[in-house]
Image (cartoon, rainbow, N blue to C red; front, side, top):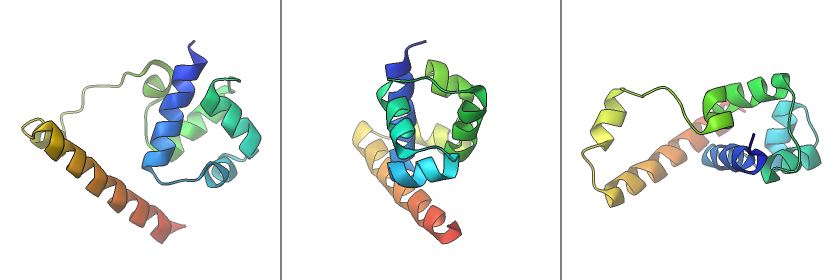
Length: 107
């Protein structure tokens, strides 16, 4: 297990959702320090914590652990394949803004 890479994937997805480390730790029912240790790769986590992270961040445990996930054949994914890298970055920023707005609406 490469805990540094695992932590980096968790941190990136947390940031994509717009969660602060403190807010994310609260959702996980862990301390912000332990959350930081996970994200920095200093500590591993229990299976339960891994499952909670997967659920909260809407990613598979395979993605968290190995950086892989099942092939996504959604309409939006197929549409993005026809965009330039610059257009993909714009679309990603728009989607991040949308997700953050939806998360704040439900909190």
